[in-house]
Image (cartoon, rainbow over all chains, first blue to last red):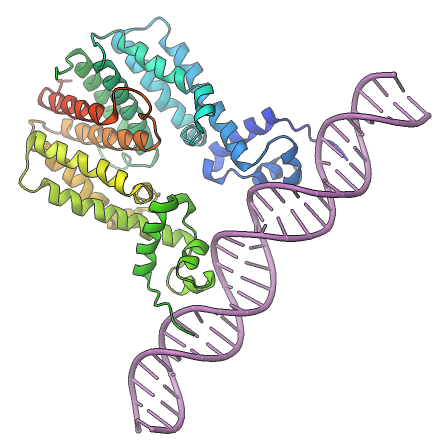
Length: 189
Length: 189
DNA sequence: CACATTTGCCTAAAGGCCTTAGGTAGTGCA
DNA sequence: TGCACTACCTAAGGCCTTTAGGCAAATGTG
């Protein structure tokens, strides 16, 4: 009996790959076990449950995106920073659709607080340093940016912008132009 | 043996209610059968599969939102129309979280084309009639609006904006102010 | 009204996923 | 070398999906 060498980390990693290949919804303890040529029950020594597995994949995705964001934002400000951050999300979602979906997996409050989620919020806020917004307007702007990034990326992933002109890349660029203009000219209340 | 009086319509309607109560993911042929005090197998005379059931719920939700949108847009233009349409989505998602999620259920191309989806696109475009945008910019703007609406509503539903000041309602209003200002001052390429 | 047909829900059963309990065989250290 | 520990296994129960075939209620026909 040759051992497969399972660990929570390897399972999470393989689960993330599986998600990208077949979709996050199809990530299942059984499917993952098959991939390691092992019985499903064997995974339960490394992972508490199917829910736990999904949570770990979500945390991995959040972490990876946050790492990419930090790197992308280094040395950039203003529109350069805005574009860099936005592209991180969009590119990540295109390269890793399953992981991107995983990142929206609902986490319980403590887990969410300990995740890379707060880093994401801080980085979006960092982009706003290049613009002239004071509280509470900057919070509204953070929420708007988050909405656009997530909304655009998820509609695009759902195929919403394919099969129709102009192509999505162009809309994405114009969307970022528009957001930049909006942040430079934020309307007063 | 008293008959339950199942029909595809009643199943779809009850499925939508179930979705709102326990979440769209938990809508299952078995759970729906339980609700009608009937065996799961009995539903298969009225609905082709679990996937078919979910598709029907998705179509119902799209239709309901489109109907509300049409009513909300009647007699409105400019920012009034923008706000009215945006509020339809947000309110619908808050009243019917399960249905709102259902509306994002991936439809195959033919089904999507026959759904209320295209009506939604036309209504968003109608809002832009109150602003001065020419193609292809209006298409970019349609996509941006769709992204913000969906992004904001889904982040809000995920609890992203709760437990932190300022409250979500305020951000929503300022977001719509910002979008209005942006559409009135759309940056040239 | 009696009878035939259709229709609506049922039981049975197979297959898949999740999860727990308890067993067995590699692995590493005394 | 032998023992303890760990890693994976088998068995089994529970829930979900889906198909096949059966019986009874509803509907229509002479």
